[in-house]
Length: 75
Image 1 (cartoon, one colour):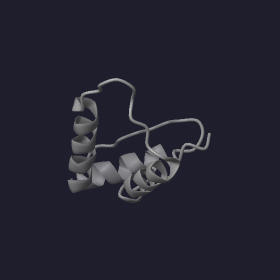
Image 2 (cartoon, one colour):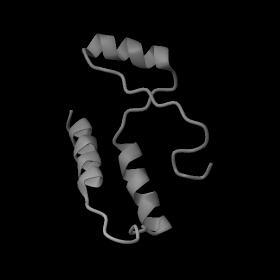
Image 3 (cartoon, helix red, strand yellow):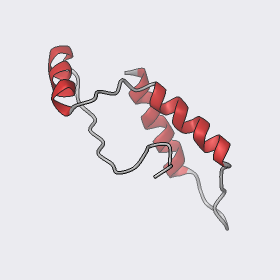
């Protein structure tokens, strides 16, 4: 639950930050570190059926993310 809370807090902060002028860019190293920290806090499953099974067993929800390319940004 604390991981979901951290993710929601990060999304709220990112969406509520006012932007004045040009957008502030992060370096590649900072972005890579942020993605690494986030992805290591999530219990990833190799298949949706496995995630659904474990969610039902534990009384939790499933967050399903389907994407092309790599989450690290190297698509």
